[in-house]
Every structure is written in C-alpha cells, then in structure tokens.
Image 1: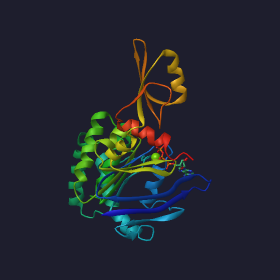
Image 2: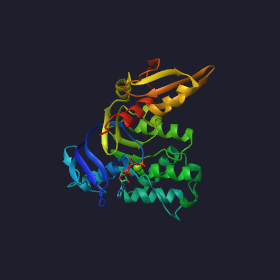
Image 3: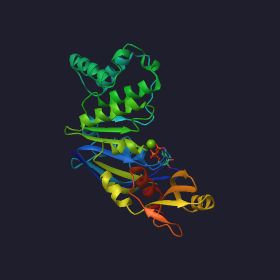
Image 4: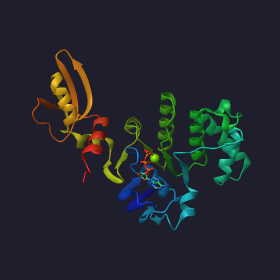
Length: 293
Ligand SMILES: Nc1ncnc2c1ncn2[C@@H]1O[C@H](COP(=O)(O)OP(=O)(O)OP(=O)(O)O)[C@@H](O)[C@H]1O
Ligand SMILES: [Mg+2]
C-alpha cells in the first residue's frame, strides 16, 4: 500500500487557498497529520477520500490515479469526517449494520459478527440497543470510529478522531489504531493535539497555512527544532519585555524573577541556554518560525 500526493493545490471558490503545493509519500502504518486550525488538514482528507477535487495536482493510490479510479479507492476506504454527526432512530447496532451494508458487506452473518466485534472494540457493546441519536457525545464519536473501521479498510482516514473522547478512551483508541496498523494498512489521522501523534505515529507531516512545514518522523521534528528552544532567567521587568519579543511557551515564577522557555532562532541580550525541545516546543517552532513569507 502506498499513497503519493503530488503538487496538490486547493483553492475554494471564494479564493481561499487551503492547500499549496503539497507533496507527501505515505506508506503502511500510522501517519499523523498535525497542524493548527485552518491549516488544511480536513481539505486534504476530503480530497484523499475522493469527496472533493483538487484545483491541481494528483493523488496516486498504489500507482493509480485516485480521481479517475474512485471506485477502486472507495472500496478500500474507511473514513471518519471531522463533523461526523447523525440524526438516527436506529439502534446503535443497527446503525453499524447499516454502515456495514453501505460498505458492501453482503452476508448477514458476517455483518453481525463484524458489528459485535466493533462494538466490543470501541466499548459500545453495553449500549448496543440504545438509539444511536441518544448516545453521549463521546459515544457518538466512538460509533463514528466504529463505522469507519467496520469493513476492514486498507486505508483509514480519520479526521480529529479523538475530539470529545476522555483520556482513557483516547488511549484505548490509539491502541486500537496501532493494532490495526500492524497489518498492511495505511492510517492517516489528523489532529492538533501533539500527544496523539507522538505516542503512535512513525511518520507525520505538519501542515501550516496549506503548506507542508515538515514531514518525517516525530523524532526528526524534535531534532530540527534543536537549538531553537531556550531557557532564560529574567527579572520581573525583563519578563514583560521577553513576552513581547519572543514566543514564550512556558514560564515558572522563581524567588527573584522568572524562568522562561522561549522558541526562536536566536535570543539576544539575555542569559539564554539552549534546551532539548519536546514535541510541543517543536510544533510551535515549525508553526511560528518556518514558512513565513
Ligand atoms: N468549503 C469551504 N469553502 C471555503 N473555504 C473553506 C472551505 N472549507 C475550508 N475552507 C478554508 O480552507 C482553509 C483550510 O480549512 P480546513 O478545514 O482544511 O483546515 P483544518 O486544518 O482541517 O482546520 P481545523 O483544525 O480547524 O479542523 C481554511 O482557511 C478554511 O476557512
Ligand atoms: Mg479540520
């Protein structure tokens, strides 16, 4: 399995450029798409699942052009849209059965087995007879995840899947995806939560204003931010200055001033010491200090 995204551009009818010259190579395993609000993550995903056409550029799935082979792509796809919502009178298990039928699972017996299995996997078995529309927000989210995975897709595209999940469910969900990704499957997951990526994804891209600001392994992102994160001790007066001049990511009040962590290419005029970045720092560095025209 491989997906090759080539010179992709998307300009919406109002003139909003959501994607700009995006090039990405995606292989089996978990691929994290990280970026702030409005970066273009959902736009990229909608193009990937062939629901939307790019303005220019192309996507190849196993060498085949996705736009001219929509049936081929859709047959192996599981998709959870960011705004997945439903108004359903179906019971939870009926809803999943319906999703399985839509995904082309013809055998009733096979569907029933898949439905029970997915209900267990996402922790909804106990509420399987409750109306889907009456589930809690987090439970609806889990049902959304279940419908995306019901037909053993080869390409899983999940847009902000952990929004609204409690911490325990988030971990459970990450583990579920990690288990699936050990097979010959591509999972693309978008998020703006750095921790969702660092725990599970071997490969990632950071989108910023429609452009790829970084692609590689999360460790590589850290390595490239090395030397751009600083720890400074400042007085009360300097503290205000520093906050105006630099991107402050953390501050701790000390006995006689502040210990401040800032992100930037260089820090002048203060007693600054470069420190080892964590993924949050690296994220801020790439979003705030690269790609600025
Ligand atoms: N249907 C649309 N018509 C016009 N502009 C759009 C449309 N959908 C998205 N945009 C714009 O495209 C840009 C990228 O939006 P997109 O939803 O892809 O970002 P995102 O990275 O998914 O953001 P978020 O983290 O908030 O979900 C934004 O500027 C947005 O306003
Ligand atoms: Mg989005």
